[in-house]
Amino acid sequence: MVRTGGGSAAKRIGLQVEIDALRLLYRQARPAAAMSVLLGVLYTWLMWPRADPSMLAVWFALLLVAALVRAVLFLRWWHRRPSGVSILRWRRSFHWAAVAGAAVWGLGPVAVVPPEDIVAKALTAAMLVGLAGGAVATYAASHGLTVAVVILLLVPMIVALLRHGGDMEYGLAALMAAFLMGARSVRVHSSALAQAFRLRHELQHANVKAERSANTDALTGIANRRAFLQRAESLSDECRRLQQPVAVLIIDVDHFKAINDRFGHAAGDVVLREVALRIEAACRRSDFVGRIGGEEFAVLLPNTRIDEARHLAERIRGSVGHAPLNWDDYPVALTLSLGVAEGDGPLRDLMRRADAALYGAKAAGRDRVAVG
Image (cartoon, rainbow, N blue to C red; front, side, top):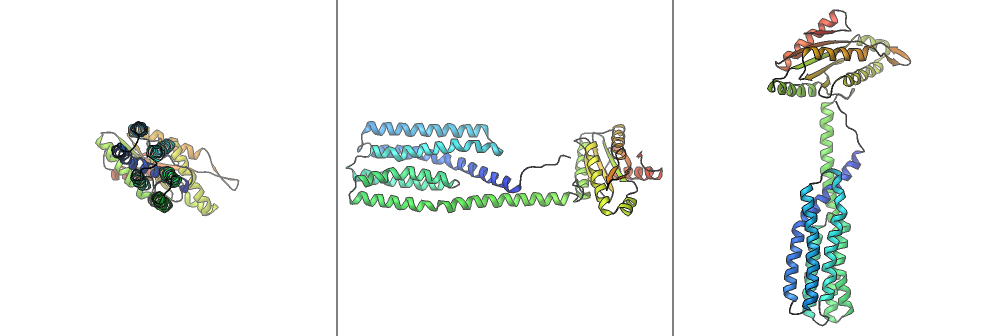
């Protein structure tokens, strides 16, 4: 009976795209962070004979600290398993951790590599370009983060090569700069990922909307006949399994044709919408309401005995009959006839008995509740 609202579909889909992108970042960054440490071990081993061991040790220690920060972040993410919009609160932490790791890799080798060792420079340049390529693949879901990480990885070394330049250094700097310029195309990849996320959620939204439309009465906004029978069948079967009673109300708007004839079909539509609202307002959260015919409604009452069902039927009748509907400043008196049945048999038997009781209420003068 609860009707869901919310913001525009476009806004909800946009938020979901951001959430999907951040989930992808966390999922892809875990192996990338581990690979960064392994490459750090390899780089330290290769550079140990060529660089100042104390400087190299300090750099590797900083790399381990950055890796530990990311590991703690990933463990917290896994432990808390954030969901919904709350996931976006984890974005800033992820970005800072990624930027810190890139800064250690980008700035550290500039201080570690001996200025005169061209082999060490070439090895470092190759390592940094490889890391930048990995960053493009890992962080593609966030164009801004990818650009920031690639710049931090490559620009410090490019500047250092140009400052201590010979022909070889200029060549290495040119190759790194070429990769840096080519990495700008990550915007295309990022846009494609975002579009894929968006299309998926738009399709899901369209499916939900179509299903809701197929199951909802267009005039009153409650379940239509098909949806009511399906859901009521499921609820009544569940009550039978749990050995609980179940009751059904069949409700008819008295003299509805006369209302249409006197005030017009527009007034009749307003009457049906208002009756549906008042029925829902009088029912409990566990009850299920549907429109099963022109001016006929039904309510399934799970775990409900006949006395309670009859009391609820009287409440519904009173909620409609005690407050006339105004149409063009003219009060339109409304009354309901209701049939009630309770039992543990199949739904079709309950509805047949409730329908028979409804006809008995109408034959007895309408505006009353009858039990079948």
